[in-house]
Length: 196
Image (cartoon, rainbow, N blue to C red; front, side, top):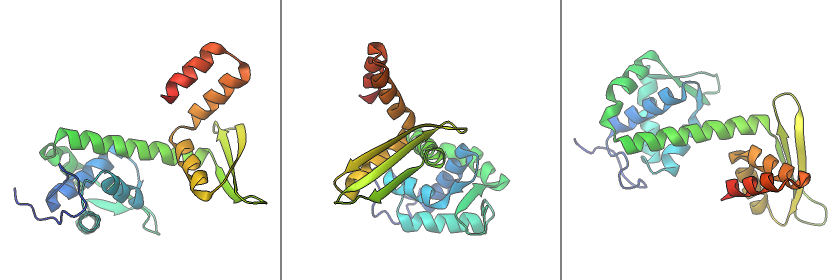
């Protein structure tokens, strides 16, 4: 196979042909099965070193042009796979290595989970009087607020680190605090094991 994609910034085992990048984009969107943020898709490619950013954007444009994927909103923030794109994913995705497909599917599922957590569990970061920042975390179950927690941290980078960690698994924080509040030693041990 000819390598025709610019390879700057990609990891060993990354995608080096434009057609492979297009196939991977269709494969990820097919795995997700619903509209996906364009920025999230490019983030998956960048964070995992699958393909160069410019090649990824070029492949997205080509897929849209050929009606393999389409925008689902007027602001062009969300894209979804079409029937043509599904055909590409089902017939050609085996051209990509199994390990890269598994890594891509896991990364997409992780981002879907984080976006769901962001929608359901608000976080507010505000500058605190006297310096530092307050971070307000809320855990909700879709109907009601289960817990609200206010933390004070010295700087914005720490506040953002807490926010990112919280969105990966808000239920873990809830379990740890509930275990500590109830004094249930078995629950505390279990919650601490989850943190490892």
